[in-house]
Image: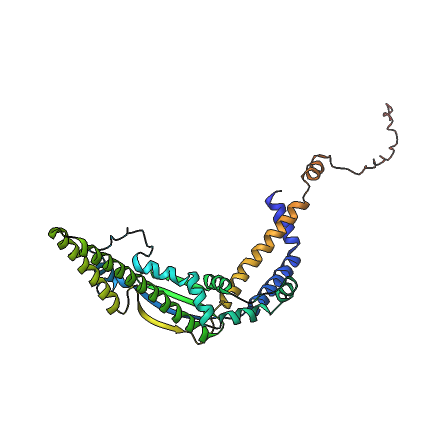
Length: 309
């Protein structure tokens, strides 16, 4: 279909297209305004390996090798800290110590989905539901200008959002600390058992050095306040809900709806277009109306001149 013919067809449908744009935008705006709002609890943390003296360098005889310049993935104890915040153990802790399962049950009883769940057999929220909610609503963002990371947790209840973020930070930090302390204790016990059986003086000196390193590791884990993530900004929650961002969504609707309506209109014109009929109409000779011949009036005969007149 030629572009000019397509544009001519869209211009002919301009009133219908404008009406469709207004109706679609009004429907999308109604959905955006009806969506439940959520408060965002936020905290800024930094890996403990990059602040003060590196705890990981005190826990091992050699420091960890730094990653490449293009590798921005978390490493060391901080990677374990971030993984623990989304772990099933964290979900079990939230289900046991917070009111999140009751809130999930209340949300399920709202809307048309409650009827479907009632027919299929509803069940109370458990740790799996809490884990799914946690994976959807917990955001971890790395700063481009520094080594800090931003933790954000969105929830409709600001007090519950702040409480859950604090609990998740404490749980992840405690998990890393307990794992390091348990590892140091196991190594100390194994070295002490080996020292009781070893009689070689040279090997005993090496074992004593290893034992001193592991005892120092246990002392650092017990003394330092942060072994995985150091709080740069304590967990706080905003006073007004900010999710979803209604102005941004309305502007995006104002840009996306006209484009979608124009594409649908163009597709409909292309479906209705019959190229065979257009070619046949262009190839057929133009039909002309018969023209009546005009009658020429009779003229009197012209006689030759008579000589002598």
